[in-house]
Image (cartoon, rainbow, N blue to C red; front, side, top):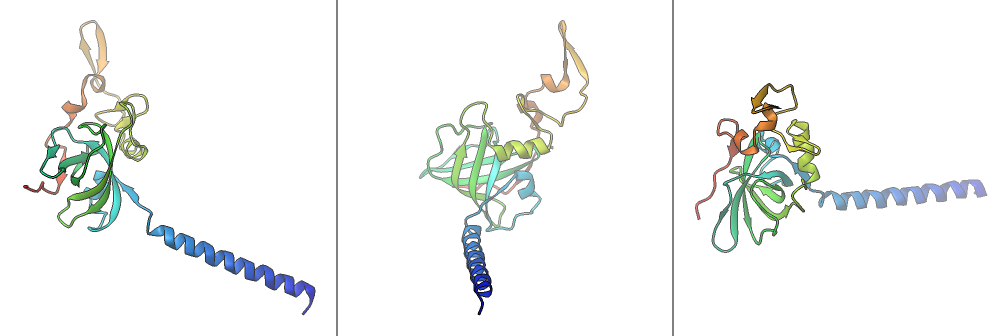
Amino acid sequence: MTRKSRRLILIAACGAVLALALGLILSAMSGSIVFFRSPTEVAAQTVAPGTRFRLGGLVKDGSLQRGPDQTVDFAVTDTNATIAVQYRGLLPDLFREGQGVVAEGTLLPGGIFRADTVLAKHDESYMPREVADALKAQGRWQEGKGMVDKPAAAAPETKTGSETKTASETKTISETKTAAGDKTLGQRSER
């Protein structure tokens, strides 16, 4: 064997070992990767029951129910769809209705999300990046303004006193949440 052929064999063997090591690392990491889903994606049944993922959105106003033994039921919404969530444990101090939340867990066959981890916002202006991206894609979140009731479009103007405001500036988030426009997936369990 010549010196050149030995060098090529050594380089090929090192490349094969590196490729094998990279394959093993990626295989090990694939089991720990958790994907983010919005309530709209979950309601559209794009997620199979038993799948582990992160559910992000806003805690729906009036949905928080505390049960015995640190059990908590609440709903996560992205203003298009709402998913019922069950959680057992202590909630973060900053957890509140109407604020951003990311819950990690699995979807049960009945459409209820069982969370084993709940992450809340950092301060009043914080929105989890995944949640903000999903709401931006729907046209319901604007940087600097936060939640908007409808996708950005030319809204009709209304007069209030001596100033003129668009309809989107005068509505509050609570006014935009109607029973007709809010689909709930799953029923709350009675405890």
